[in-house]
Image (tube, rainbow, N blue to C red; front, side):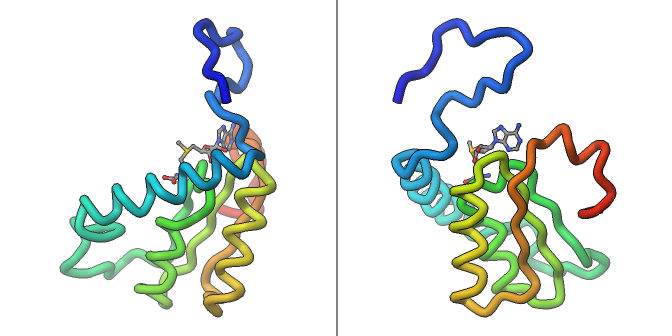
Length: 120
Ligand SMILES: C[S@@+](CC[C@H](N)C(=O)[O-])C[C@H]1O[C@@H](n2cnc3c(N)ncnc32)[C@H](O)[C@@H]1O
């Protein structure tokens, strides 16, 4: 993996290949570490999620953070989007294995959300 020193203007410049297994492994490790250090997926909401029915994670990667929310709060519908099909396939597979029917994942370029009403 290489990080461009001068990324081309106007292009999607995510610094690693989002379809690579190594990048997915890096994000999974990073997510575990950060969530552990924060004391949970959303520690500031520890006293209640009332009024929150749906969550959208833009650039969800392998979906670890959103899957934690979906597991802990089956009453909340969570949706993750990421430009990487590999990441969203993995996240969807984990949701299926864990039986999380309140979680869905879609491969999508973030700017497309602005013109799509499907997920909102
Ligand atoms: C730093 S990672 C964070 C992943 C995840 N939120 C996490 O905390 O583990 C950024 C993510 O944004 C995704 N991404 C980059 N450009 C994107 C775009 N234009 N639309 C949607 N996702 C994008 C990448 O594929 C990558 O999974």
